[in-house]
Image 1 (cartoon, one colour):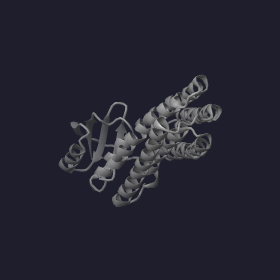
Image 2 (cartoon, rainbow, N blue to C red; image 1 turned 180 degrees about the horizontal axis):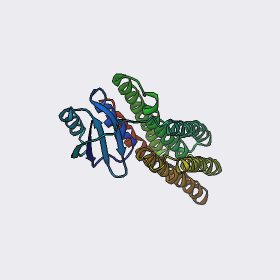
Image 3 (cartoon, rainbow, N blue to C red; image 1 turned 45 degrees about the vertical axis):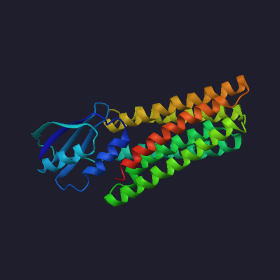
Image 4 (cartoon, rainbow, N blue to C red; image 1 turned 60 degrees about the vertical axis):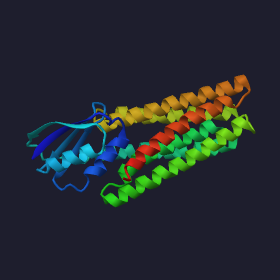
Amino acid sequence: MEKTIFEITKMDCPSEENLIRMKLDGISGIKNLDFDIPNRKLTVFHKGQIDQIEKSVYELNLGGKRISTEKTEQIDFEEHSNQKKLLWTVLGINFAFFVIEMATGMISKSIGLVADSLDMLADSFVYGISLFAVGGTLIRKKRIAKLAGYFQIILAIIGFGEILRRFFGDEKIPDFSTMIIVSIFALIANGICLYLMQKSKSKNEAHMKASMIFTSNDVIINLGVISAGVLVNWLNSGKPDLIIGAVVFALVIQGAFRILKLSK
């Protein structure tokens, strides 16, 4: 058994991890992949076929570079069932708040809440692609990624269209109290997710660290929507809601393009 370490300079979230996993899927010599996203390192445990592995990593254009290859006696790669249960919990919370924020956003006429709901959905997609596709074929994984990516882009484009319509035409002042209250609950939910991951015994593992970074970004967005709600009330204008909505929609589209990379 050999252990090869790669530096992946553009690997900074679970989307790149899934991209690499699917690119290397099907190379029979690979026994295990160990991701260290915060330090942008990938360790591949394999039997031979290093040229094929190295070529596949380079083809991703993520700044991959082989650092070292050495013999290893490690042969036991345990399945982290507790970690999977935790990620299922985080996925469930994100998807639940996608439904809640989408419904309350439409009722309260808040673009910010609708955009934040799509960000929650994007998170669910990132976790779900890897969890749902475990044991599946490469074709199945690519189909899931393609559907998820295009679905997010379509919803975000519709959202941008609504922002432009309100900005240049029929401006609607959203219910600021609904914006603030729902976002506070979303903030609490993301706080719970962070607490559960921090409490987990596997919190120091790369994937869990990346998940915590991902959820921390959601907390910042929640605070942005809360601030927009305060400004809507203070200025008696819907512009702050449109601005935060546009920012979050842009983040959703960026995430969608990352997911679409998985389908190539």
